[in-house]
Image (cartoon, rainbow, N blue to C red; front, side, top):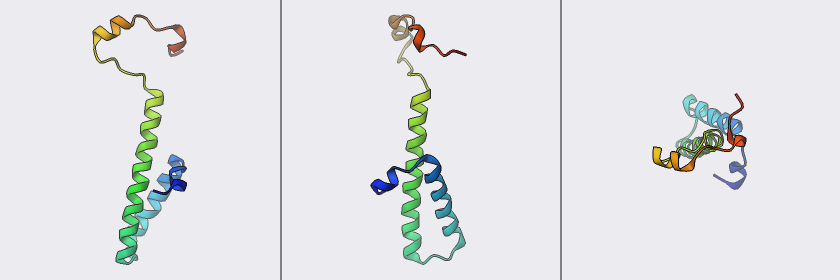
Length: 84
């Protein structure tokens, strides 16, 4: 994926992936165009997955490796608690 493509939002990457898949499904692409479309589609899909992974890391709390690590860490400061 080009640097410009990596700056795309999740939604834009997903839209472009959808467009690419529709073009492939239409069956009007030449073999070379289809090969390029598959490569672009893989890039868009990979980019979407990276964006989802980043979002997941931002909203999920880190998981301790074991209960003993959790006990050793002690209580969390109030600022880390979820307010709901």
